[in-house]
Structures are given as C-alpha cells and as structure tokens.
Image (cartoon, rainbow, N blue to C red):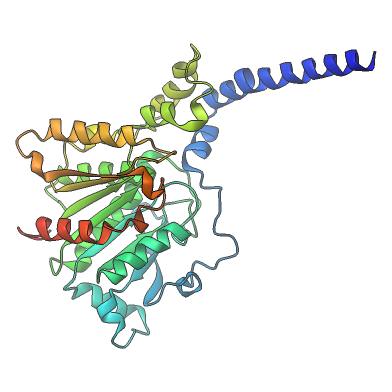
Amino acid sequence: MKFSRFLLWTMKVSICIYIFLFGLLPLVFRYSYQVQKKILFLNFVHWPVGVDITKPETVGMKGTRNFYLTTDENVKIGAWQILPQSLMNQTIPDNEEAYEALLKNASRPVFLYMHGNSGNRASSHRVELYQLFQRLDFHVICFDYRSYGDSDNVDLSEMGVVHDSKFVLEWLIKIVNNSAPIFVWGHSLGTGVSSHVLAILASNGINPAGLFLESPFNNLADEITEHPFAQVFKHLPWFHWIIVQPLYDNELRFESDKHIGKIQCPVMILHAEDDNVVPFSLGEKLFIAAKALHVDDMQRIQMTRINASYGLGHKYICRYKDLPRIIENFVTQSTAGEKI
C-alpha cells in the first residue's frame, strides 16, 4: 500500500514538472518580454561578488583608472582605462586628465572591449584578457553596457546596448584623434553588439583598424536553437513559435551574419572547438557568411580554429599559447594602411 501511494505521488510530481517545463515555462517566455531579456542578457547575474569595480586594483589591474561616460541618451556608463605596459614603467598618472592625455597622445594600438552577457567589466576571464593586452603594450578601454556593473539600470534591448557601445567607440575615436589605430574586440554576446555597431558606423564612413570576434555566433536565432539549455526543447513542434519567434518579434536578433557584410575593416574570428556555450559551428557559419558577403576582398576575413585539446572552451581563449602572436600579426596586417 505504501509503495502504491509513493508511486502515485511520484507520478503526480512528474506530471507537474512536465507541465511546468514543457507548458507553463515556455508560455511565460513567449509572452513576457521582460523574461526574454533577463534570460538573454543575464544582467542580474552579478559576479564577481564582493568586488568594488570602482577600484580595478582589487582584481589585479595595475595602471588602470575607473571613470564614467554619459551617453546622449543620458545613460551613465561605467568604464576602465588600462595603460600599456610601457607607460606603466613610467610614473602612473594620479588624475583623470593625465590618464586621458595619454590616450590622446597614444602611439600604441588602442583596444575597445565589448563583453558578453552576465557579470561585469571586472569578471575574471575578462581581466585575464585585459592583462594580456597590457603585456602586448596596448591601451585598453572596457565598459559595462546599461544595466550591467555600475552603469545606469535602465531598460535593456539590442539597440540599447548597441547605442551605448557606439557612443563609447565614437568617444574613443574623438579622443584618440588618429594618433593610434583602434581595434574593437567583442566576446560572445559582445560579438553581436560589436558587429552591429561597426555596421552602423561603416554606413557613415567610420571604420576602426580591425575587429576581433571571440566565440561568436552567426545570429541569435541559431544560438538559441543550438544552446545546451535548448536541446531538450528544440525538437518539439512549438519550439520556434514559442522560443525563437518572440525574440525576433521583439527585435532581439543580433544578426551578425547580416551586419558583417557592411563592415569595412579586417575581421579576425577566434573560436575554440570545445565551446559548449556558443558551438564552434556557429562561428564557422559566421565566417562562411562573411566570406560570401566580401567575395571581392575575402582576405580581410580570417578565422582561427582552436583545437579542443587545449580545453579553453567559451571563456578562456585568452590563455591560448599562440594568441599573442595571432593578435600582433593581425594588428600589423591591419595597420599596414591608414589608421582610423
């Protein structure tokens, strides 16, 4: 008798879980724009925990200042300026004006970093990449989109984060004023942001020296479909209608495979075969699309495939032993012509 009751209870619980997972939860996702944005941007995931991001030195960043920009939409953006190694061997500036003067008179390449979802500019894998840039003697600007880190907590959207990023890049172009080449580096969701930004600027004749796309996807629809969390749902007949279509309808698209056709600067795609967040196949699709859209100048589009044996996954291409050489070679090739 007890076993029968237990079996009945187990069946009821299983049915409830099934209804929740395959009925209620998908419907909530389809009809709630707020839920869609939360799951896509993960801006509520605050890590690292207990770190004061206004003090970059607490995460090991030397020669770095914290500062803020206010966009033309009146959104405050938190950012860091990181000095190249050669300038750290001199006296570190003690005020914002002195830091900015070093950027205005930059003689080494300047990198603008656009991060992926969750966390903030102080997240550990991002800090590892900044430190690599610093060792390579590059200036670095990194920042948090709206609703990330200590940037203003305002409504998120694709165009919102694109606008923030475009504003920061335009500010950087104005500050550097042709003294040094500017490169944009996007990671994960940041590849969708950076591709969109550069496509918009290219239409106005503004092009950085080059674009690095680390662990990119070709478009959000394919990324959602291929994401590990979607595998249990993707073969169900309602998947596209409930999960993919609402994002598209709400203009959460990040269609890098379209935007990349408008980008006029050299592009380097970096992707690890063992990426379990953005499958390698999506980076390859983006590469193929880019080559097809730039058929008259295909050599500007490059891709580096990183063997799974290195175990770098989605976040740690910064540890790839050949990455410094790849970056330096690409920078040299891209700056053979004119600066931005």
